[in-house]
Image (cartoon, rainbow, N blue to C red; front, side, top):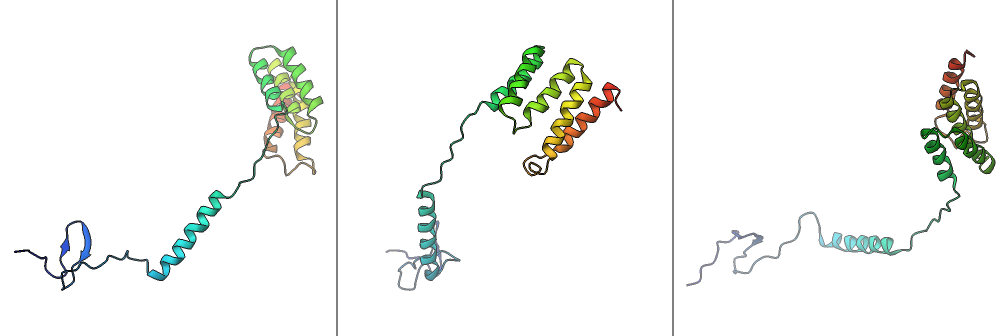
Length: 158
């Protein structure tokens, strides 16, 4: 004798209901109706097409700014101030449209104890980043002002 589950009873792990004829009812995921299945399929196709579409490629050329700017920090930490100042001059000459040369020059002079010259470079850096043509390109102009005021105070200019 074959035992059949009662009508409406659950069969193991599946969530199928058994109809009165002994045939299991096909489970339909809750929340997705047949009309929604077509929309879901279309959305999946669009998502796959978006991922497969070629993405723009950006090539950034290494102009040496980062290496030169970071070398000033390394030279300053090593106490090689003459070489650090030479690197600062190169920064100012080769990259006049970037504040790094002015800021690094202020930093080196401050480490050397020449606070008056450091204040001059920090003032130039502050003026550079607050200039109307560059104001939107730089954040943190307050840093340059604070460094300038600190160096002026240490130099006895305030």
